[in-house]
Image: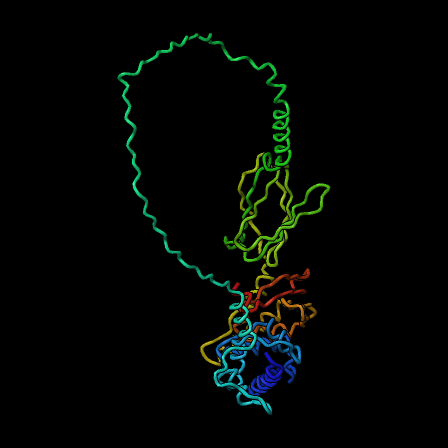
Length: 393
């Protein structure tokens, strides 16, 4: 990467901005000041024209900061170049040469990639040269293995009589000091056993209970992540988060359990159980909050119709439904997964405009929190639209 490459990228950002402004009207002409719905519309246009996408995190990294200090990956550079009307990143640079700049025709790898390859080659271990030594074959004369002949016929044989003494067989001596000598081993074994029992007493004496959750009205698994707080006497609550469709497993040796269960689209529920005669598995029903469920349903509802008139009618119907469900003074937040821009506040009309615009991003909308007042109106919404990177995880 060179300083000229960074200057080329700044040129490319301006061309991308100009290309988008030909067909769209964002909240600000400067691409570095786009946020929220502007970025979503740009991602949608990028998918249509260049058949690709960049994540929201990449947009904040390379477009919200100017000038940048590092280049994006080559695939992102090629994608943006195609969007701006060029065949590739190389073609874009070729048509925007600076004075005195030379561009090799066979330039395919960035300098950083070449340096990385050279570094890999230099670190490869050298294969030592090995020579196979010639075998030295020695020929030795065959030794005479004939044994010396001896004539035992004339040699006198002297028989030495051995006196056999029968040893009296006695039983082994009883070790009277066995326990005294091995007392340390016995004591150590006992201490290890006691330590093991004390260390794993919770696992040994505890019992595991399984709690699953279902929608009381529909008879299906809950569609939200559940927050379960286990309340224990003289202790801080224990918080557990259970994903949709999963069950909650809890091991305890206590005789009672108290759980506080909450979810964005379901009514708050407090569960108290006496575990002395309780079953190992239990199905708990959660009552859905119809107002919150309806607001979520209409937020992600597809408004794409067969023809423009039908689509306009669907959008109008969706807006009216959300207008009736959401309070005019509702506090609405969109949460982002990046350090540059963490959260954005929207008013009611901006939120309705966002969720009634036909984009593929709406299928990734998830509600983190939703609250309503005594009249049933939604007064608070906290939501998130997952980026493409998160969706593929």
